[in-house]
Image (tube, rainbow, N blue to C red):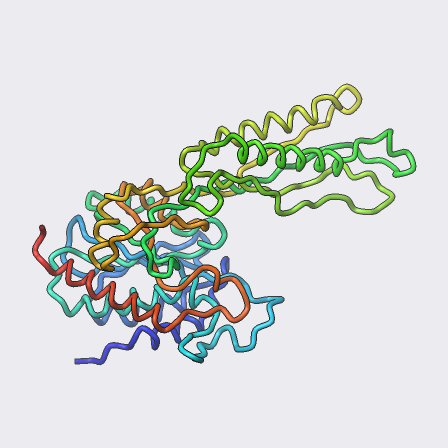
Length: 390
């Protein structure tokens, strides 16, 4: 019988693929398929429209509904401008840690899931194990949507989903939703020496940012609360402002990228509608002189939040296979978990190795003990899928 590569062996190969968001991930998928297909997995891909990258869906075990999905993304954030002490795309082991881009977020879990899937193929599973490996998660959970839409059209669906984002192997039941938006402020250009005769779009943008700050303060003061989060309320954040071409030209256009991260108790559409009202109140007084004055808002991307009950099936399963019976947590970052729950009606929770504090930065790493804990959890998952239904 062919030897199974270890989780670390698989991680070493995964880290070597420079699968930045919006970049191809097909070589990585070829490698994973090369492990899974000979083991007997049933594999299919759901590709991006341009064919450069794809999601991978793999099933081990019996046909039909039920079973568990292990979900992870294959893309990583850039390393440009970061001061690494090691090669970010070559796994480096040092002092009980594995360094490399994506080790924590989240190729460590993907490696453990692939390792578990190969082992699962040698077991007599009564319920299937599924792997869902997606692309472009880091830019708004964009890639996984096509796979979820295709699965939603099928009669048989899995029962549960475990998203393996880094939680330090603690069970997480939720995360905030997100809307990424762009506001385009339209004014009228002119010579800066005659600035009062023009309408400065940057000034409109500055007023708009001030209105975002006021809305944020209102959410802090009087908004809904979820004490499970480090920041217990919904948040509004402006991250990018662009406008102007030269100092002596009054700019006629300004763009502001901003986001809303909402707790489940808040409706992000309602927050956005209030922001749109503020935008109109800023632009409207200028229209008597400048009919073109306006602030247009578009939604660029977004994903729903996740808020699983503590007695949800996915949470009960995670308690069983991790042995945790203490408090659960919620995470500050977003995941595809809300999309799986919303799109497929699956009970979904989050649990994976490593810590997000170690990701997205130079010398990203995952501790060996975290990978080992994940391997143990997934071994118990295979036991659960092999056991008779309770």
